[in-house]
Image 1 (tube, rainbow, N blue to C red):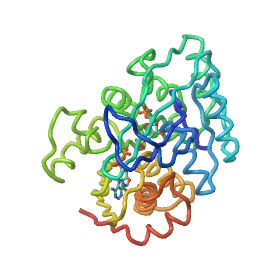
Image 2 (cartoon, rainbow, N blue to C red):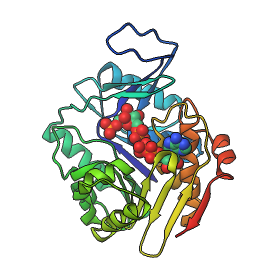
Image 3 (cartoon, protein in one colour):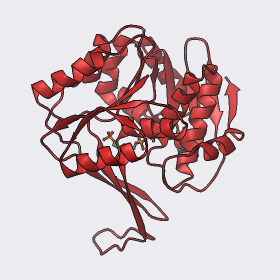
Length: 303
Ligand SMILES: Nc1ncnc2c1ncn2[C@@H]1O[C@H](COP(=O)(O)OP(=O)(O)O)[C@@H](O)[C@H]1O
Ligand SMILES: O=P(O)(O)OC[C@H]1O[C@](O)(COP(=O)(O)O)[C@@H](O)[C@@H]1O
């Protein structure tokens, strides 16, 4: 089974404007609400690809109820821990020229609520997959993903998608896959990446630090997969970006869905990248048919 952990789920309020005017009245052209948060998005894409997963994490209040109901309506299994605070509302504003995101990072998790999550994670069995994705609420420690990685059976494959020290701390437990984007890679090492060669140099450093597979996603420039054996480059087609929220999570969801079918790594990478691009080119998270269509246009080169 695939377990996704979203420490701080959100109600994503997606707004479309023709133009975003700062400091002025903006009138909405269209909007939709959905359960969000990185682990939850991975679960949603897995469901769209007809694969099961269980979404874990903390939810609370009226927004928490909405998140759970929204996921259950989509036939996604949840096993959230209920807390006594409202889950956050993240606002995503898409206009013709720009995408703006407003995310809340606060959430107070108590010691006993933390223990509850550890108990759930401890019960994972060999061959399960654990996805630890998204920002860590400020009340939790910087090595929370490392601690969760430490307690699972060593045969559980771990995927970590987060930023900075939260990601770096988890590397000593040898995650099977990590997926920094280009800017996250720059931030980890405090550098400005000049070209693809640079991406490979710093991607390899993450391998040396413990990751087994590193995917560096580069939005419209595709992605690189780096492991001990190979460096693969995925090139993506050009298209109209409708909403890139969740593109990175879709890459992970697509990748894992192919892994569930025992596909080779190169194929998992292709389906992952196709899923990311399919999400960028649609208003919501990618659907199976969209991925199938885009898959044919993903070119993978061995470097
Ligand atoms: N403008 C785009 N054109 C085509 N594909 C895109 C675009 N933006 C994102 N993608 C796809 O989604 C993947 C993840 O996007 P990226 O923005 O790098 O991740 P994140 O959402 O984590 O920041 C990319 O590797 C690519 O496959
Ligand atoms: O675009 P991405 O990076 O794939 O993730 C989008 C998701 O992440 C969020 O922006 C939350 O991010 P964080 O957990 O890192 O705070 C959600 O609102 C949204 O559903």
